[in-house]
Image 1 (cartoon, helix red, strand yellow):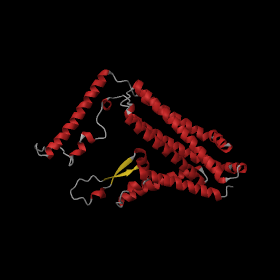
Image 2: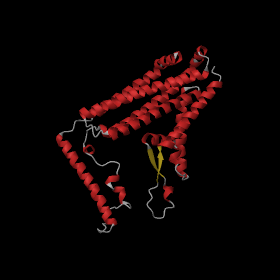
Image 3: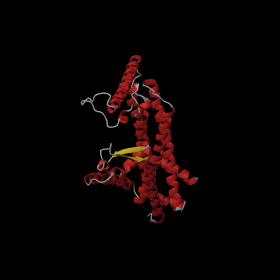
Image 4: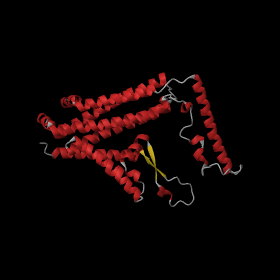
Length: 336
C-alpha cells in the first residue's frame, strides 16, 4: 500500500502529467464554448418547418420504395431516367439505420441526441492519446533518470515495483477518464437542454452511448498499457513515440499503398486502425473489389465486415504480448 501511495504522489507530481491534464481541460472547454456559441434554442416556427421537412423526406423515401416494388412487378412502365436498385430492400425505409427527423433540418441548433456519440468519440481519442503519452513518459523518465533504481533500493522486488507502477497508472487514468467523460457528456446535455435541442433520449440511446463509453474506456486502458510497455522495452519515452511514428509511416501508410498496388486481399483487416474502429463502433465495413470478381450476375457490393470480437482479440494480444515482454526484460536487464 505504501508503494502504491508513493507511486500516486510521483505520478501527480510529474509536470508532464499536469500539463496533459491542463490540455485535456482546455480542449474540453474550447469544444463546449464553440458548441454553445454556434447553437440556439429553436423557435416554434423553426420546429414546425423542420418537422414538415422531415415528414416530406420520409414520405419521399416510402414513395421511392413503392415505385421500386411496382417496377419490379412490372405494374408501372420503367422510366429510363430514374435509377432503380437491383434490390428494393436497399431503399426500404423500415430497414434504414435511421429515418429523417426534425433535428436534421434545423440550422445552427445543437442536438445532444445526434452529436453525443461523435463528441464521445472525440473525447475517447484524446483520452487514448493522453493515456499513451502519460504511460510512456511515466516509466520512460524514471528509467532514463535512474528513479527506478532508487525505488528498488527501498523495495528490491523488480516485478512488484513495475506492477505497482502499471497498476497505479491504469487506476489513475481510468478514474480521470470516467470523471472527464461524465462531466463532458453532462455539459453537452445541459447545452442541449438550454441552448439547443435534447432530441430523443430513450433507453436505446443511453444503452448505445453507454456501450460506446465502456468500449472507449477499455481502449484508453489498452493504449495506456501499450505506451508503458513500449517505453519500458526501449528505456525511454521517445522509444514509444518513435515506435508509433514508425508503425504509422511504414505500415499504415507505406504497406497499405504496396498492398493496393499488388491487389492484396482485404488489406484493411491487417491494419491496427481498422481493429480500433471495429472495437469502438461494434463493427466496421470495408470494401474489397476482389469479392465480386467471380460473381455471376448476382448482387455483389464487395463489402466485408470486421466485428468487435476479433478486433478486441487483436488489441488484447498486442497489448498483452508487449506488456509481458516488458516485464520479462525488466526482470533481467541491467538498470544502471
